Length: 156
Image (cartoon, rainbow, N blue to C red):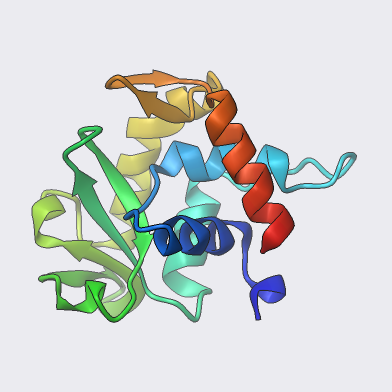
């Protein structure tokens, strides 16, 4: 049931059902401003999102590289995506629900190190409200992206 799924799962599923692969970490973090009710604005941060995907989800999520925007993206690892080579990120020697494809094997395999690296890489964009990549530049959401997110959360 979609009502019980986290915001990022709803967004990724809706996007992937339209034939796309995934979203950047800042995009997922920024989408929360359209999901959280007014007065309850305590958005999940990068560490919390990655931890939830890896340890507290019943769905496998993957990280890969998107050549169109030249950034890493997150997607849901459905049956089609299970054919992609790679390995699961680890926490204390055990697999998590977060998968790294071979094209991003330069990312650390240990979950704690991954969180540090991705926070270092993306926190400034999140802090500056630059959630999206347009024409290979980090920007705020376009009107079309904002509308997409709103519709996704209304329909999910």
